[in-house]
Length: 509
Image (cartoon, rainbow, N blue to C red):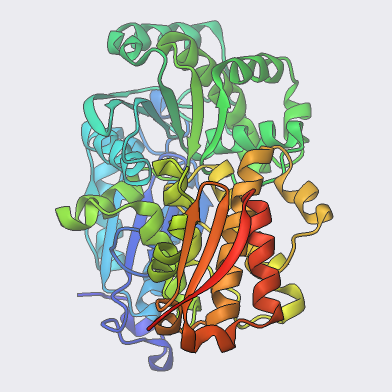
């Protein structure tokens, strides 16, 4: 029974069965976080997310106990989370604790006190289970991931060897920035600590089995590192999730970060002040893992143990769904018109895109699902809103260039995207060929909506066909009245973008 339900005024308690939200409370060694998702599904949408940096595991190696101040702050934070979830009507609570609580001599007492005061169980997960769930989180977002997953917490590093979507082996290593801290506000990277790291890495020889693959970096410290790298490059996006760089670029940047003073680090643009102390350690460890594993790329993921926990409980039929398509369906259902049908739109325009790869067709399908995303916005701003919304929305299963393709496609469905917007938000993300492909997809969507007014049954009476360098729009005799000047102009524009000659033809009934 939830003991804190009385804290929430009756007027604020929602019907918990309306949307079946699910909450995850992650009691980590450095931070305590509550994430409330709209439901336990293939692409869960975070509707509430709060993090408190408590430092539970600070000095764990030297004392063997939880940091007293951190324990009090963590306990108080979880009590607040319990009150919030009760007010939201969330009854599906999944609370777990990781390295600091499982290793500290007073960890069990801390968990019992939280359970007593908050009214829900706290699962203390093993290092192996944490590594498994973290790897599962990455696989939930990147189903065919291959390489090494590394999830850096405050007091441990969980690693796993992934190969074509399978977790081949995993381990947990007792290394982390907080447990190696010498004082309340310092994190060191002394030779002793480097020696300890080397010793643990030497015991995981299978790291080198992923040579040439990708290193999937999970954890707040590494995402902060990624944001620093993005700022240094003046990168057009600010989303660290699925930010991907070469191993060479990562190593070069790591060498530069290692030369910065603590003062210079704390003043680094875009870096959370509370994270600055963990960056030297995270930087050193990332460099060594990249060197040791021989990976060719580094990808930063916001999906980890929490998302892995949600994914783990899904039936196999849902696990098999494409995460990007599932995420786009979610967004379309929340914001699009009930008459919109992205799948029908995708099928109708597909004959015009005969030279697509499977991945390109997937992105176009995802864009079609969001084609009506901005229908309720002012017409003068629909293109801009679509561009920025898709660039910034928490989509999964997509890299940054793919996100840029979708943003440009859906924006072009509404209007021509200005060079100013393209330069500011898409520079360096798409080459000319992909920009043209995205624009053509958007123009095809625009043609479909212009001709049919969004009435799918009307659209399906027509056919778009491509024969070499000729693009044909076929329609029955009775529909030729709908082909006005605007439709003809937009059809010609689409054909031109595809490098084709346009032809509109009617067919006998």
